[in-house]
Length: 296
Image 1 (spheres, rainbow, N blue to C red):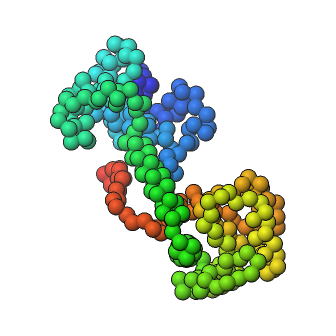
Image 2 (cartoon, one colour):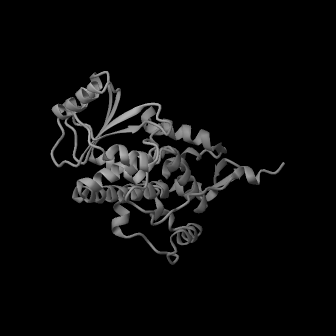
Image 3 (cartoon, one colour):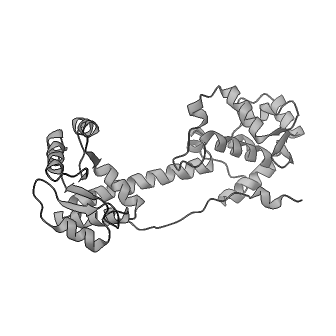
């Protein structure tokens, strides 16, 4: 948080965009760095960090909001810079009473509580980043457990799972239609034929294999040959294991459109479309609507 305070050292007021641009030049960020998004894809990491740095510095009384969206360094902020601190982090800001009040309200801890040695050595992240990282870790754990459960399920249950997932994704028409299509016996390595949409304007041929071993090019090539025999143009090959690089390269070069879904992607899709999982908690992240407070 030292660079944002230094950027305001001259005393002139800066708006949020100017401050971000100045820090962009200070850190010599690449375009990729500047536009790196949080896992949710909804906010740039850099913008979030600058925003929280402004909030923390303001709560500590080191900068103030001169008018909506404009910031200015305070006398307390100049006093801090005069001491030439090596860095300013949350631990440093706890020396200011106003920040301790803010921090205790945010964490529900008694005022004056300090971070543990482990927290001091951990690189600081914004609350949004911490929440996104925690969500990512929880999701990875759930996906791993899902894939393990799918691997232990019977072939019949696996086919039922595939039906529910495809229908939830918008394919196959109704559950009854898709279940009947994937439940029939087909020749040539095809497990079923489902509607591409509810109207059945096109058909998608499905291969669903609950395998442990890697799926190679010969297996995928055989599936493509089955599509050729049916004069079909689209297919989905789903497996609980993985596909070899040769298999993936093969589907990129052929005219048929074949989508390969391996175990990891299958688990991810199950989470996205709520197959085999349920919601435990939901958190809403809100921010102040500054337009609401704009007086005419």
